[in-house]
Length: 310
Image (tube, rainbow, N blue to C red):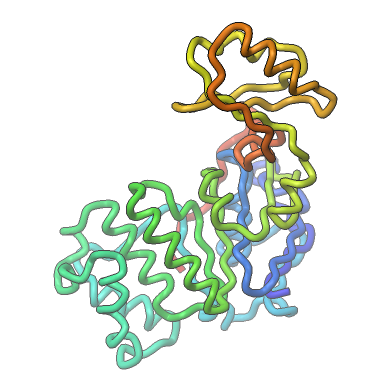
């Protein structure tokens, strides 16, 4: 295991943020920590990075407690972004690499390639303050990966990105995985987690509620979802016997059903009232698993702690 969390626990002002959480992150995987806002995702990552110390428990990197050289082997992009706005893009990239112990001589030949990848090559000599918020986010992603970390930690990496740039970042993440980089990222965007992750851990109220390889997790929940495309008002479908929940999307409806529910009966009931264009029994999406499993406590405080770029 490259990274191990052993019953780490953290409280803020008597409120439990992370409750004896244990994780094993294998080498070379994309590992997603998912859960609702305030579930403890960011606090967990800050404890891994030693920004916040756990009240109890142990964190091991490569089988040993993280020492002073640990951060040089890690790229960390926090949810709250921050760059030196008066520096040029090149200066920021070189400076961030130097913090990781990598010399400008090694980094400068790589800068053009990476700025090209994220459509920032024309801004290399411009100051950060001239960039839009989304462009700054892409720049900070480059500063996080340019020193070729062994472990890449990304906290809500897709927040604020448009679909085109989300796709660019996704492609880079998959490329880094093929090179052997281990990637740990947190998100509440289930679609991206489902596209990227080998392994997921869902936490809610600071506690682990699901932990396993994505395919195994989906198999565990069985084929208990139905996707239906209809013409007409399908509002009545949620009240049919055996339907546990319904999510409406632009082009279809997704139902979560009891394992004992007769799908033919549902099809007949729906077809008697509206035109059915498609009716598929499918594995539950990660979105459905998230909705069914994560119990959001409205009284739970938001996560707290300092924000850093390390």
